[in-house]
Structures are given as C-alpha cells and as structure tokens.
Length: 127
Image (cartoon, rainbow, N blue to C red):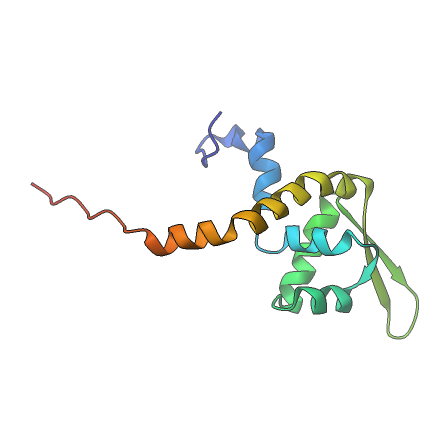
C-alpha cells in the first residue's frame, strides 16, 4: 500500500490516509499531548500551545471531537465555561504518540543537521 494521495475516489476508504491526514495537521497532536494530563479549558489549551490562533484551536478541537478523540463539555455559567478531555479513544493514541514525541526529541538535532546540509539536486537541462 502506498501512502501518497490517490486520484481514486475510493482512496478515502484507506484507514492510513483517513486517520493520518487528520492527525498529521499542525495542531492535533499538540492538543492531544496537552490533554494527556487531564481536562483543560480552551484558554488553558491556547496558553499551553502558545502559537496557535484561537480560530485554529477551535477548528482543531472540533475535528478531534468529530473523530471521537476529544470530548467537549459546556457549563452553563457567565461567561460559558467549556472543558475538553481525551476520550478513551484519545487515550489509546497516547502510547504511540509518546513514542513519536520521544523519537522527535532524540533525533531533532540530527534532523536539523540533515536539513542544513541538504543540497537540492539541480534540474536536468532539457535537450
């Protein structure tokens, strides 16, 4: 099985594409990682992630909720209080996510060095 985008309309049925496209965005794994410690309010999540905009965090949380990874609870107060928690499905992602985080920490310097040393191949001259 290849991991590239396919023109086949049935490619959306591929579980690898379907799940990793969603989790491979810029913010989803960071949100899941932050919720590992327990329930957080929207503003707490935003502070912990730092460089995420309010709009992007709201969209990310909605998608994670839609996928069943995060639950959202609204409390009737003024102003309304909203809290986010990992679901059992979201918790099941923590073990593989922890491995990915550790790999990134262990290999970050090597990846940055490889990027710095990379020389793009020259385009072939048309004959």
